Length: 259
Image (tube, rainbow, N blue to C red; front, side):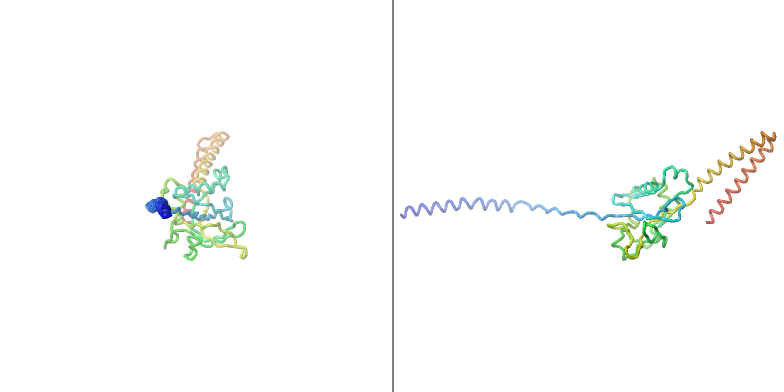
């Protein structure tokens, strides 16, 4: 019996050692492996909207609010190309070519928005106050406006001059997460954005007037010469019409510089 017990205890010791060795080796291998970082979930970027105040039609007295999304804007050049495309999409193609109205100024504005997105401009050259930083995203500046109207308008008409960086985009107030909506209780909500101001296109007006007066002077001169048989008098009448045109153009330019 003693021999059998000795053999049994020896066998159990060998079996125990053989089963413990792989466990120790496996534990050492796991400890030696580098710990992989746990991937973090990227939070979705906030939605951004620029509030644009644009007249309902050429020469209209009422402006409406439009709020295009600008999350994909990565340069000022892309921003002003978007402005041009968005503004022209609100006007018929044939009308924009034939109309004597054009975009003349772009202003930073504070406004009230009513039902049907009707806009009442309250203040020009305005930016949102500091306490609304959670509602509007923009680069803080001590200047009002942070960008002059002349530069904004030039960039609109000449997008090839716009830089590929985003200095203007950072300074323009952008509504965060949601588009501006009218308060259900008050029926009006305040907002900040850009106003597109339209006016007469004096280049088109002067060009059309020039061709009209030239054709009129030539036509009157030819008709007078044909029926009165006096070429000298016909040229005198044509010259008088052109002189009146020159005086009227000079007067218009003088008044436009005073406005």
